[in-house]
Length: 121
Ligand code: SF4
Ligand code: SF4
Image (cartoon, rainbow, N blue to C red; front, side, top):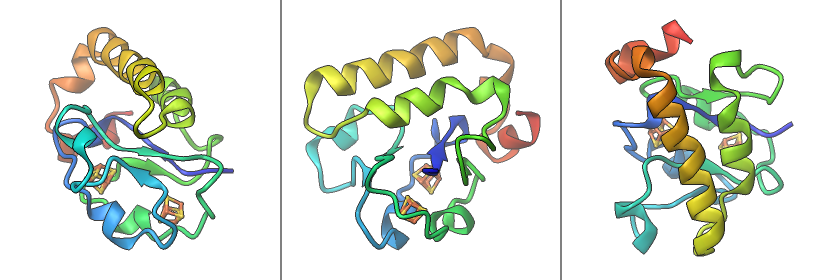
C-alpha cells in the first residue's frame, strides 16, 4: 500500500522527501509552478514503490508507511494524496479542499508546532 503524507507537512513543506524519492512520485517539487500555491506535498499512490526512503527523511514525521497505518485524525489525507495530480487543476483543487477542511476541523492539531504534531495524531 502507498505511503501517505499527513498534516505535519502543512507549515513545513521542505521537500526533504522529494530529494530521496527514487521514482519522483512526490509533488509538487520546488521546481514545479504548483509548489508555491499548494499547502503541502502529496504522494502518488500508484507510482510509489513503497521503498520507505521518505519516512526517515521527513523532519516532522508526516509520512505513514501505509493506508492502514494512518490514524483516524488523518484519514482525509489518504484521499488527498490519492487524488492529487500535479498540473491537473481540478485534482489539485480537490486535494487542497480536503486539506482545507482538515485544517478547519482540526484546530487543536494545527495549533501544535509541526515538529510536535504527529505525536498528537
Ligand atoms: S516510499 Fe519511496 S517511492 Fe514511495 S514516496 Fe516514499 S520515497 Fe517515494
Ligand atoms: S519531508 Fe515531510 S514535511 Fe518535508 S515536504 Fe516531505 S512530507 Fe512534507
